[in-house]
Length: 451
Image (cartoon, rainbow, N blue to C red; front, side, top):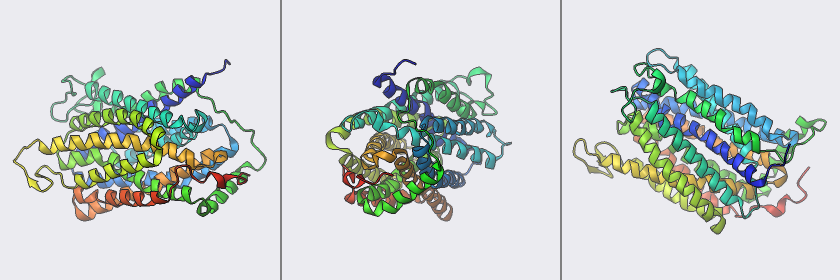
């Protein structure tokens, strides 16, 4: 097989973000989440169910990610792991089709959604671990930022496609452009909206083709004797050494908190708008378009800021912006904004929430890209997949606690606005822990640490 140029390898790697982003955009945030609220009918109950489902998936990821990362570092060939978890992704996405109004098994649909989340997250762990192989330390900020931006554009195209051609209004049965769902899908049975799952799965299969053609794992290993025992031993030693690598330790803790708060915004944003502001699936989708456009633009710009300032100042600035939005969201409802009582049917809450969406998209795109490059600087270069497994653990350790906390807070308070307040604390605690994080990590401490 002919050699593949570095440029093609980078573009192939970009296409994973393009292919996988619709799962987050369409299923977790802007289409399927508000649709579940429509089916359940009660925004508070829907937010609780969603929190427990995403939390359960996060719990599974938290336990398994570091172990799988350690095993992959010893066994090599990260591509095989990506194909394995891609199967989970596709099965979980297709399962969403089963959510027919009036006749679906909520537990089964939520279980399949959780399977898809697990597949998406694990495939992402292994693709993220390839980032340092794509360029120098001075280049990976731009590469990461462009990858996030490309992924956002993929999510945007998929979302517009879904809203224009498939997702129907519950009231009119028409899509955003006033037509019936494509291919004769039954609007009364909500087949257009339910097609969000098959669309995400087909999208993934089609746009992973450039990844398959152009991405190669530069470090395929032959499997040593006792590989599993060696992998688990490496993981134990890495965890035991964390207190001796204070920058990595602090960064894992910090990112555990602020990334989960951001994920909470994404996961519950559509449900929150549907329940508090009474938005339809189409309303929430338009909100998503605004957020994604700003996310793509600022992820691209943020990659240059990352290279110029370093990832730490960029992350701090984004946390401050997101904390402000997290606090502000609590003070926006259909009746009032920041305590100011509004006239009936005022559109001010909608306009304010659109501004919040643009801000979350912009800061979220930048912070996720910068966080990925920061992890490359913190990680042991000889155990990159294991390190990204720990990074996934950090990202998921409270990704089950945060949704559970929101689920509990919402259930106890019976108020969606109070229910999202745990996100504020997560952002602030993440910001505090960044104080002990060095931009260049604990590089000198890795010398002699490899087995």
